[in-house]
Picture 1 (tube, rainbow, N blue to C red):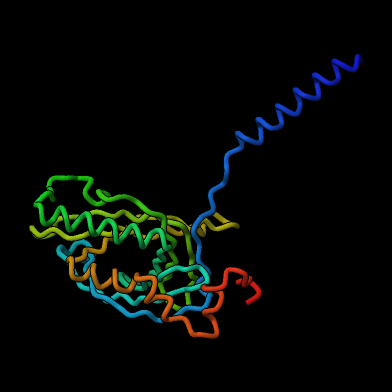
Picture 2: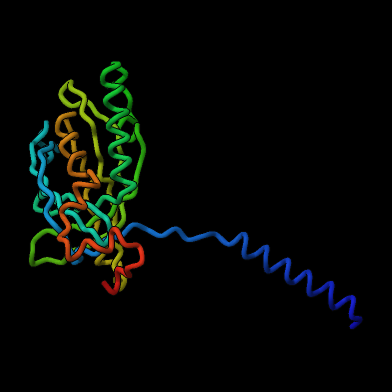
Length: 228
């Protein structure tokens, strides 16, 4: 084969390789949390969820909050309908919660909330969360990523800031018969209740919960977290 032909083929192969590399889709890393990571209690707040069918109306629940510094995640732990849920929020998710609440407060003040809006539950966006759930402490605990809708909803004629934990599915790696679905659950916040959670989401406050012997890796980027 002539040298010029070989050179042309080489250039073509190189260009093709570069093209394939540039068009290969990047796999986005999912937000996950190890529930056995170090965690520190952050407080609790009160909110409302729907009563169990066939009952109507809202019921109050207490949600326990803890901080997982290695993942920079906040866990909202609550129990309803015999299940315990561990709802995890990333930093970007917490920022979205605060931004959505600001938009809700503006709409509330300007009377822009529409009770006929069927898509109001995700009016301010959708973020990715991470969820663990289990029925009893002796039963298995499963997990999956899930969407969280940020919006508002009218209940009994009154508007609430709404945070909806969408249904998700744990996919068993061995048998599909062991897959497990979570429930779709909406938390309904008054503005005062939502501000209580905003205070618990505050990053400086969360950092203050970390004992000094574990806090160095936050301020020193040269520390390897896995070896700390």
